[in-house]
Image (cartoon, rainbow, N blue to C red; front, side):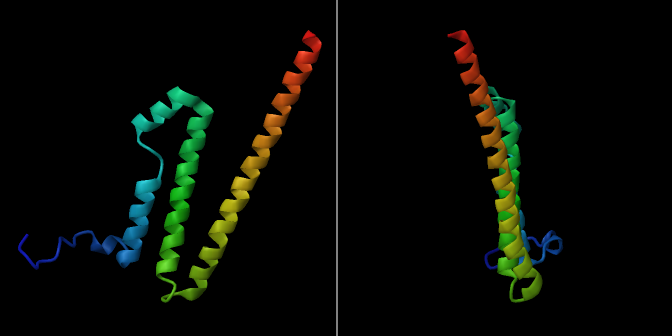
Length: 122
């Protein structure tokens, strides 16, 4: 490439300008980890935490990408951008809250089972 010459633009039509490209790159950088990383997580902490890590990283990547793009293009279409900017965090909060409630419920059940087993043993 010669000095002052711009880069190759073969993929320029795939994105809605720079904002779309950056949103796509942020998703790719944050989403589900590689197979080697996933295998290491599974070996260290088990299958359930591996599935959680895969789901969590994908949700975070999607949230960042869908948060960045409307924020970067809000001047072009303010109505839909505002809906996405308000709705995505609310949806993520509701999903995480339900996961925490489910975890607490199962954790409490396991604790009660362990305590009842101790009482029976003594």
